[in-house]
Image 1 (cartoon, rainbow, N blue to C red):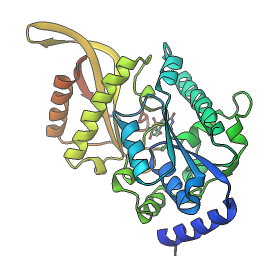
Image 2 (image 1 turned 180 degrees about the vertical axis):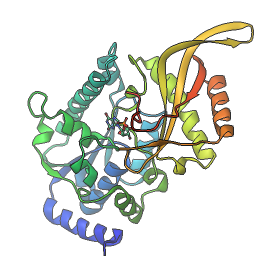
Image 3 (image 1 turned 180 degrees about the horizontal axis):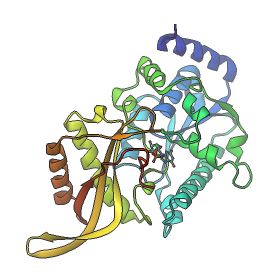
Image 4 (image 1 turned 60 degrees about the horizontal axis):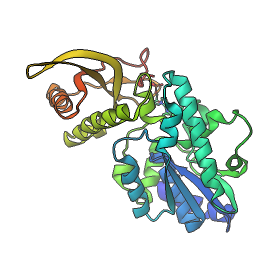
Length: 318
Ligand code: XMP
């Protein structure tokens, strides 16, 4: 029978054998898969694993610094690369969802290629690909591997894609990856994270993206997600997030009439992201969250809750 401990022992031995003294590059996304792949490889080859964690400026509030610290605390040889400005500059003025995705994919590849050149004599590229990624075209987990795959037909092959590829989780399902992660001692706060799309908040800001909109959505999202955690609801939800709508609506504040932004909250139950049901969150929770958002986030005067299931609605709005 399959056990996580046996999988770890066997895979670490195989990785040692396969990689020897060569250097490996791995893109960390902050998600479960790339993190588990990194810890597994680190256990096998130590400092010869060079991890790269890119901030695309579209992560959750404080995510880049918090997760980078967490990775460092786990002993990983990781370099954080803040490329926010590069991503946001290239996205400026762009409203089309697919063009936004393509731009983010392209900039990611450019940044990752630059960084991988700084790791001298690397011969391997490791990826956190899991079994469902192999059989499906859209990964529910996102992350660099997905971005790389969907863009490798653009222009010439970047150098890092000419490296030998190692994918230690390729035969595992998500729950097995989580069990392997637990067996490796990875913190529950990391293993239990909701899926987050590779293009991040870019596809939750409907229309064009500005640094101001990103900042507003990060605040809204943080109130919602922290609220779910405080109310013990986070682990009951498969994925949750907020969308910044391209809609202003009238409100009142004191004697003033306001004309400000509307956000939609979304929380779904799912097993694989292919189908999903909206979650029946407690009214008291929604009430408190809505009040917090409207009182604490300048520029937002209306909150709605998305009660659409997939299909026909998708989980993301773009
Ligand atoms: P949809 O919106 O298609 O989302 O119901 C299903 C799952 O996929 C995630 N998603 C993405 N992940 N790049 C990603 O890495 C993307 O472009 C992307 N679009 C959607 C979404 O968050 C959900 O988990």
